[in-house]
Image 1 (spheres, helix red, strand yellow):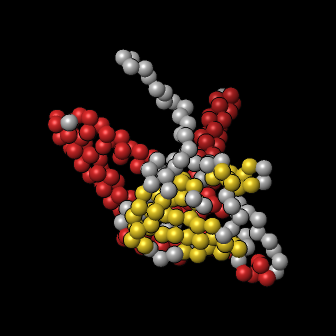
Image 2: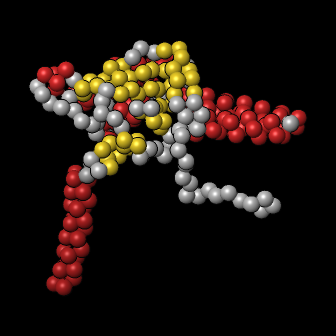
Length: 239
């Protein structure tokens, strides 16, 4: 009789313990809630709409290219291939481009010069941060100190010297040129850079970043080095 009571009592304690454990876990790990205010949500929605618009534009451009290629292929396959190759070379940064854009000037700050703080180079991290800001607002073509930036361009420190494409970046002052598709894109990038904190980051390193106004025509040099490919290789004829 007593054994049956103990068994029932044990089962009740197990049930109560299980319920307490579940309740404790619920209190310890409450369901996360979205704490953003209306303004933050509107900003994120605006960025998503811009991204959606850019993707639609890219899709339209790809469809135009496909249609053009199909039309030329039936008339002149060689011309179609040459035009496709030239487009790919331009997108890869292997050709010089001229169009709307901005010119930035990086030079030692007057305050640093007055305090005798000599600037010998610019840090790779600062250049990467600047490049990220540019890429956020459609900076399609970029050159740093005359060195064209492409998808595989390394920006790093080599033996204490900041390099782009394994070439040393000169001691400031030097120019950064940015090419955009339209003058409207150049104006958006100009406004973004003016309102961002990137200039303050340069000032901390005793440098000043001067943002030139949008220009209708600005030249960006071509990438003039060989591109290394890990996955592509030439094939002999007939393969």
